[in-house]
Picture: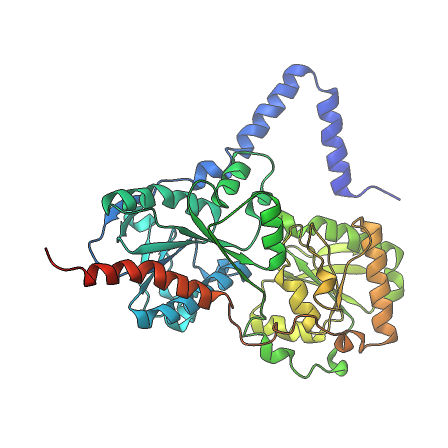
Length: 438
């Protein structure tokens, strides 16, 4: 058996570095450091400058990095859905809504405009306004990720000083354990800081599993709100009346090479192992990848991994109706959406556990191998492929343990958050209105 090209390259790099003289090693290191550049924190950290806005009308603000449709994966869409629902509930109380974003996008590319309560919402683009942000006494911010959360703090500190009031809490939308995106580094520390440091935080957490992991890392918040996944409303109608006759010999992979937590190259190695040891018995199976465009890959044994890129929701739904077996990994404590979607479309899905995340508890179609090594996942894939060939109805017959997943597409903690925001934003205003004139 020959070594694959990637293995040879890795061995060559290690051998060259080991045998090179010290001055050459130093040159290699300097070139590597220059190519790598500074950490992400160098590029994304910036002060948002406070500008007083005299309006007495209270307002909620979603502070988000990018609203383009290309960036509108699950987390962005969930954030927009939460803000849409919140704006809808707060509007009758006279609380306005605004979206603050780092990047300028045209209306045809603005994912927020798909949500009815946000259609007339004003947008403030930081890059267009030299990072200057008008802020009212009654402005409160929902931060989408760690760096926009930290960037807001100087402006929120100035808000408290200018209007002579206690600091307003940040509402931190936590949909992943963001410090885990980085190795031990400045970015890792800063992401931890945003999770609940010295600033008062109201944490909105995506799933109980993530809440448990977040708390186990030592984070605390003044208030905590938790919501569970719901199927995207555009996918839900396609999940009804699944038929065995529609299922085809398709192994569906959630493949995002640029996102390390999706473990794409581990998935590739698992597929190569399966193709080498089992693929000759299943030449009529297709292996398709969705999520991010990448080159098609020869897996050996007569099999190829064909990339479909980021499919439209309708095309994705139709593919889910046809797929028989799935492979989707997520190296994080958050239960990612693709395995849940696949499982509820009758797909037998190989995925992974992490920390206190146990995906098999959510659906009978979610299967976690005993180990994560390529041969273990490949063996588990072969078991599911054989199971489908023996009984094509196996995935459709499996039961969900998420009774609310296919119900109305909403974020269930929004009503509690809205009530608390009314208390925070309207009670001081009513007290001022009731105070006698001096």
